Length: 327
Image (cartoon, rainbow, N blue to C red):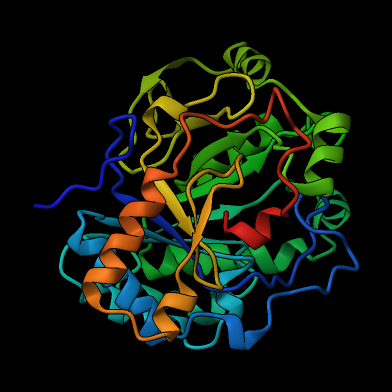
C-alpha cells in the first residue's frame, strides 16, 4: 500500500474533513457570538469533489476520515456523503465530530451510511453553564446523545474543554455521567485559535495535569488504551470500562506522533492546527486537474507539514477560528 509520509517520517493516515464552517452554537472559545463571515457556499467543495479528493487520499494510504465543521450536521444530506466515502478503497474508518444538537434526527441514518463512532462536544451538564458557553440548550444535546446510543454508534466520546472559572467544578460529575451511560470521556486544554481562542486561553486555561491529579483523588485510575487515530493519552477507571483521555496541546504537545491533516470546507489542506501552512485544492479541481496532478498536490501539501505547532511560543500566530479549519 502507498504511504503518505512527511519530512519528519510521520505517516499520514488520517484526514479531518470539514464539510461546513457554519455552526448552530457559538462556543465562546471557538466563534464570536455575532460572527457571520462564513465561507460562500459556492466555494464549498461539493460531494463529487470531496469524494474525488478523499479517493486520492485513500490511494495514498489514508485510512481514517473524521467529518467535522463547524457543525457537520448543518450540511444537507450528510449521510449521502458518508455512503460515498464508505465505498472508497482504502477508507476503513469514518467518524464524526458533532455538538449533537441534530443527532436525534440523523443518528440512525449516519450509522446505516457508515459512521461508526462519534465525538460530542459537551462542556457542562448544567443548563445555565452550557448556555453561557455555547448560547444553546443542553437538553437538545442530551437528547441527541441518547439517540446516538440507541442507534448503536460506539464508542461515543464526550469532549470536555476544561476551563478555569467556567466548568472546573464539574469534572467529577462528568466522569459519573459517562460511567452511567457507557461513554468515553476526554478532557481538552483550551487552544489559542483566533481571538476567541486566545482570550479563552488567557482567562480560563487549565493544565490537564492538575485535572488528572484531582480525579485521582476520587477515582482509581490506571493507564488505558483506546483505539483510534487521535492524540489523547488515556487512563481507565479500575473496575469499569470507562476510559478518560487527556488532550494536551499546550502542556504536553504530541506533535512527534501527529498523523493527520485537515481539509477545510473550501478545499484547503491545513497541515497543522497551530500553523498557517496550507495548500488550496479547489482551484486545481475546478481547473480540471488530472488524478496524477491531484495526488502530487496532496504530496506537496504534506511536505509543508511543520515539525510542531507554536501555541505556547507564539499564541498570536493563528488568526483563523477553529471552525474555519475544522475541529
